[in-house]
Every structure is written in structure tokens, then in C-alpha cells.
Image 1 (tube, one colour):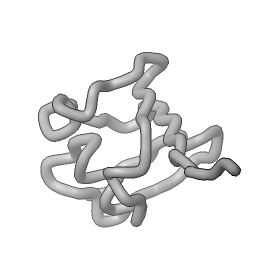
Image 2: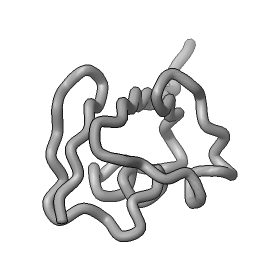
Image 3: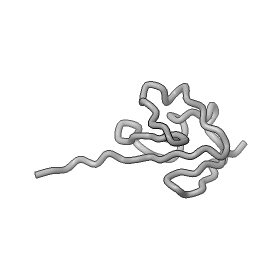
Amino acid sequence: MSLTLSVNGEKLNLDPAPNPASIEAVIRALSHNPALVVVEHNGLIVPRGRWAAQEVNNGDQLEIVTIVGGGS
């Protein structure tokens, strides 16, 4: 079964979809390092501790922001 999402404004199709389709599973399926991202799901920031339980459905919107270190 596939999963169609909007990720950072782009329509993506995950086929096969992770099962269960949690935020944590979707992040991994998209090859992001979970330790280095912040996720907004349908307009709300989801705390990392809820990623495994937060279900992602067809048509949902995710904004995935990668944390970048730096400085002088």
C-alpha cells in the first residue's frame, strides 16, 4: 500500500508505505536522521516522544526541518 504526502511543499508517494505509518517510520523511510530534524505535522510541531505513536495518513502535510550546527 502506498502513502501520498506533502513534504516540505512537495507531493511525495511512499510505495510501499511504512507499516505502521508513524512520523518516526516516515522520517526513516525518507532517509532523514531522526536526531537532526524537527517535524511539523498538519501545522503542529510534534514532540519527538510522540513520533512513534503519531499516525500519518494520505494527504497529510509534513514540514521537516534539519538542524544544522555552526558558528564561529
